[in-house]
Amino acid sequence: MIRFLFKGLLRDRHRSLFPVIIVSVGVFLTTFLYSWMNGVINDMTDSSAKFDSGHLKVMTRAYSILSNQLPNDLALTGIDKIMGTLNSEYPGYDWTARIKFGGLLDTPDENGETKSQAPAAGLGIDLLGKNSKEIDRLNIRKAIVRGRIPQKPGEILISDEFAKRMDVRVNSKVTLLSTSSSGAMAVQNFIISGTVEFGITAMDRGAIIADVGDVQYALEMPNGTGEILGYSKDMFYNYKTADKMAAEFNKKYSRPEDKYSPIMLTLEDQNGLREYLHYVNVVIFFIIGVFLIAMSAVLLNAGLMSGIRRYGEVGIRLALGESKNQIYKSLLNESILIGVAGSIIGTALGLALAYYMQEHGIDMSGQFKNSTLMVNNMIKAKISFSSYYIGFIPGLLATLLGTSLSGIQIFKRQTASLFKELES
Image (tube, rainbow, N blue to C red; front, side):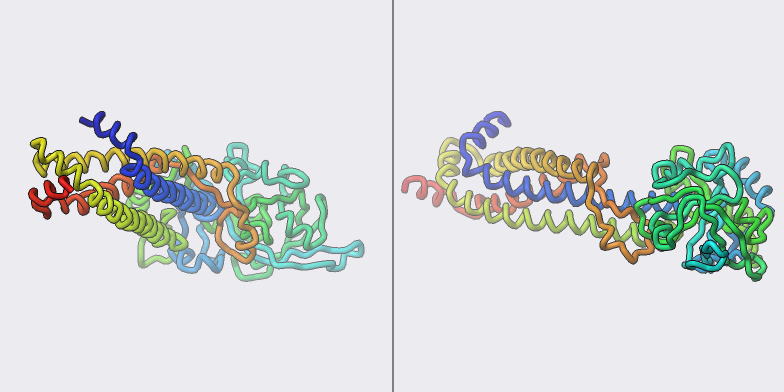
């Protein structure tokens, strides 16, 4: 029966061509937009995790409340013990200390006088540790524009755009003016070993990257750090595992009455990311719903027009002994074939465009010029397993819904009327 219906659709293009085109276009847009939004979400969460939030983050309760102000006077102390506890109790994660700080970067001229000054956002990471994964995690080797990665204490990296704005070069001496953990002025000299460009406006605008040991010394934070970040060994964020670990840690070590007690937050608990991801999921659901309704409306009208043209055919089939239920069922089977064909074509086209955008992307640096979000300037699509079947949801449902509603007309008409139309 399916083979018979399939041949009929191939031979009668008036019945199949227009519906297949409509379904293909709807599925194409659904597949591509889903992959595009999936890419934006993936890039945002990945960049945020690597440069800012980690998959898990441990801070003091007081620091977590004012984290946007970088309150290093509320930082964790005795981190060797905390790190040991984290490594022993949660061995599936790689734990690393980081210090965020702000200040002025001062460049002297040949006479030692200030040539230029500019505000800088600093990040202290484990650059010199033998077993550190920070260089690979932040992709610093590929981000190097000039110079090299720091190899000894006292060397730092600064963003290439920042270096050009301050007119400094590799091996230039600069002075960091900041605030120590005790509130006093901190002054520390550094040598620029290289410049970097991450393709993230928030980092490339005015970032300096130093070894966490140098930052601890400069800000008077011996054995202290603002944050301890945890990354899963495979760099895959599992929100269920993260939520469970954070709940267990906080129940065991965090005390609400002690503002200096540690608290663990997940990636989604920071920067409003949980609400954002929930919002994006609602948007995706809305997009699929819009295409479902739009395609159903178009296919309903097409089904009604086709039904009017096929009343003669229905009359013949009734005369041959088919029941209305059998005819209605065959129309639904036709719609399934049309939905499958259109979904396959639309999904193939959507995946093709999504793959192109996954490889090349669109440069959005102009729009992110003043952004503080950890988002890559090159926005790309991301093909996931869901991309292969997401378009079939509106593709099949729309054709079935449209045919179901239009096919009801068969039951509303009297058999005698159908025979009369057949005679005419």
